[in-house]
Length: 133
Length: 243
Image 1 (tube, chains in turn red, cyan):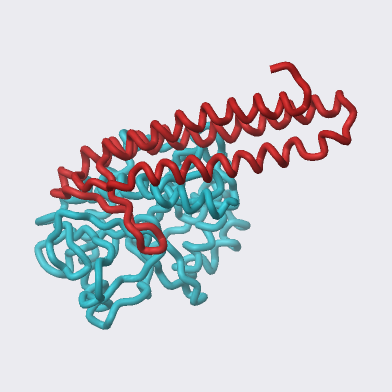
Image 2 (cartoon, each protein chain N blue to C red; image 1 turned 135 degrees about the horizontal axis):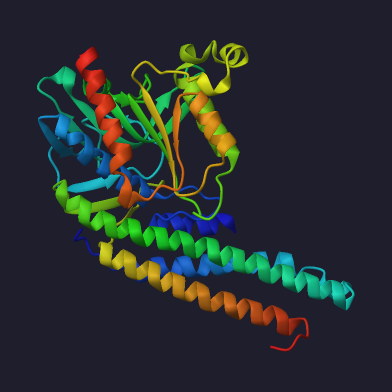
């Protein structure tokens, strides 16, 4: 696969922003109403939020891992079929053209950012509720 | 918010929880199926929608119809398995839609279809495929540590029943009268497979098997040889008997 997409970073950025937006919602939902709860209940909710976030992180990272494997496989199978470029068409007809190396790198960056940001979200949730970092 | 995540996932064609994309999984299985089946044919050719040989494979991004050869712009590509004559030629497509008996449209992730019928459809201006695929493979790329939601399997069972209703008319009665483990609803040469990276619980496997769908949980795409080898064997047996 040899097509270069100069917008690769835009894709990664979009993924990052939207994933964080989603995680933010998960966190917000999980810690909603905390202020009105007794402290022991609040602690349970923070714990629940943490578990939810970790579950989301684990699921997303497992899929990223699979995608990394598939991308690598595509890079080796396509030439056997005489295919030089694989172009992914999005449902709205737009194209995503990445080399397998670029796609792998994008997935890795996404996973890395996801990991850092979830840790940050958890820390923020705990600090917001007055727990030590 | 989920729309935003979906948009982002689609941008990189990846699967995310609750959002079924996973196009790279589709591409890997499509290409590996082509390689596995190619031995039974004269030639394996990658074609664009105009029928020209191409080195750029455009993977269909969502459920779609067979385009006319004269359709403007770039349309999805396909793989042709060219036999000794037209009757023995097939095509492999991804995300193609087929008409069910109810009139509902059903997307099949990876489908093997008979080339003469698809050519006829192309020449008539394209459209939804009016008959079931010879081989239909449903794919689900989900967290490997979890079991697949049974509703996803139910949905595919309903899809297969709608594509081939006559094969299932007696199935419920058959299920009542015979021990379940002995019963398989056959599809007369048509084959349906369910491949997922997740687990499938035994009751869900049984549901699939009863309706003639082969469940393949915890699929490792680096080890598809056995599944695709069996598919090749059954296809060649069917071709020898039917074509």
